Length: 398
Ligand SMILES: *Cc1c(COP(=O)(O)O)cnc(C)c1O
Image 1 (tube, rainbow, N blue to C red):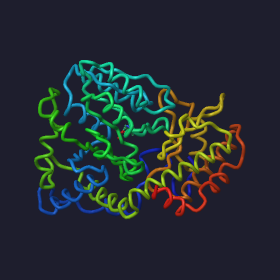
Image 2: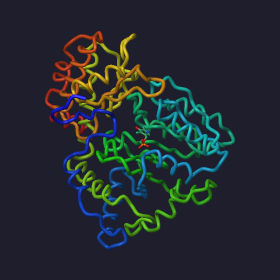
Image 3: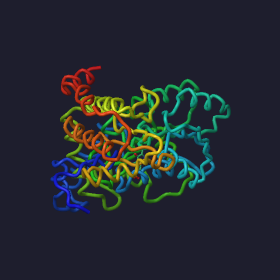
Image 4: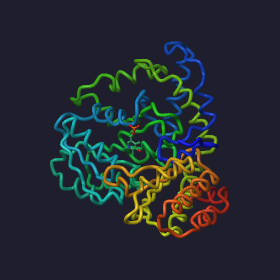
């Protein structure tokens, strides 16, 4: 390894770089998690999470990765043998499907090509076919981090309503929360799953579930065994800001700061900034003459862009070269896409210069790796960025 100067560019779609303010907030002394100072912290972050998830209902915070929060969503609402409808949007949807199988759920997995989001019409058709209304939950990934495709949750809600179906709607917002528009309550989502290390700009270690009244009611009668993940055990002490076991106190300091940072910028502005940075990234990809994996413009992810490598070129070799030469980490292609795509994360603490630096590293890397492309991607991105603040305030006003 050669020594690297300057800051490492962590441009993977999570974990995302942690802002200095959050790093400082994390580095405080641990406090008594049964004491009054902790209660105030707990109440503040639990209320802040309601603002971020856009819900008036409870949000549970686990010391866990996002995968733990998936498990919490399943074990608190469903029973072994229950039918659920899931959609193959990519790697993460497939992992969630596998977990559902391990918990004994009977999964109908709508096949997908890993280049589109979950299709509301296909979901509606499946639910309409289900005359006995035996499907207990529709489970979808909002931002499929493996493909850079975002699913239209509000339309999926409408599809469920059009089929007049009582299934719970569960959504993985692990890589979208805090970066892409999301509304737990308005969109009628029953369980929203998320975690700390992507749009919330925190280190890994917190998992979240936002819970609707309907999901809470389901948790009173469902038959899955659980202990650590049990909502009831969590919600009792949460009422006063406390936890049933030792919480990740320092991550909660960080969470308090992350929520402050997001609300200071304003959620709508945050989302518009992400959209605009993503559009500039796509302008670069098109100028290079490379192909964006996502095939549906309405489903372009504001969080990351996945780019197909030209035939005969290995995306992992390219990423290794970029890391070695430019001290930048790009996202790998996962499972079906291994070696075929690389992913540029543009989420969290990302501004014009972070993006231009990132795209500069990619463009230099393409040349150094001998990947056929046209020069001028960075220039196209600079032109697409224009005046970020003006563009963002226009987008945010829409
Ligand atoms: C990162 C990610 C996960 C996995 O989260 P972990 O914190 O690694 O358990 C699940 N779903 C999506 C969409 C993700 O981006």
